[in-house]
View 1 (cartoon, rainbow, N blue to C red):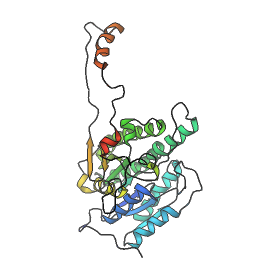
View 2 (view 1 turned 90 degrees about the vertical axis):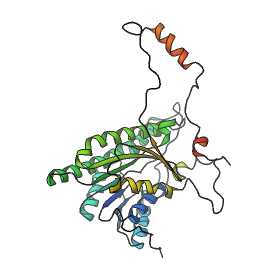
View 3 (view 1 turned 180 degrees about the vertical axis):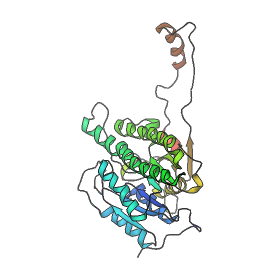
View 4 (view 1 turned 180 degrees about the horizontal axis):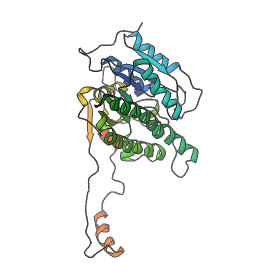
Length: 321
């Protein structure tokens, strides 16, 4: 029998309705459980395919099991078997939340797949499928949720409550040699988030994006070489350590947080600033020539690392096994 979830009192998400996509396993599951613990009624979405590359038969079992776990612990949850990359199925997901709970307040986009390949080996299908699920999937649910919030705001004549939490990855920040499709999709999600934050703020909606570091089915290759914690030690890469930040961003306490990118794992949250100008050069004439650019840029880059990205092991503070 499931044990009741430990709950804060008062619960910050009481009376709010949430959707979490890709919530049958890993990060999405941890996020759905945390939102429920904080008081939200949850629609647990998962297409239920067994392969992390999107292969296998669709199954309602993962979503239904998480929804049942929430209900057994005293929360409210319904399952949704659907592909968020399909425009009409995403519409149905938002409609299910509204029909079941009377409204939608929180959207957490987490669903995704992997089809890793080096850029010179990647097929068109491998590129399209990852962009389709990650980037279009985020767009589809955000589109229908934003329509709902805009209509409610106009009917009420005032802002409503709306929270979007999207999922990107440090693969777009640091590069990932074998994941050009994934890195591009995750970069696109950041752009989608900042655009949505600007467009929806006047309706009372915030949109933020996280780059989680967690050991899940999706990242088993990434963290395969890192030492796992011993008995009684904190697992900094457990998905459960990401979920509290999602709960915070979904809460009234984060009303002033909008258009932000945050990296999170274990006991660390890093706020990432927008890109800054590292150096600036002005021409001595009206416009640059090739020769002048060679004269200023070549010395600037001389001696600098060809690829100035951080080392994952160093930033994560982990040791390879």
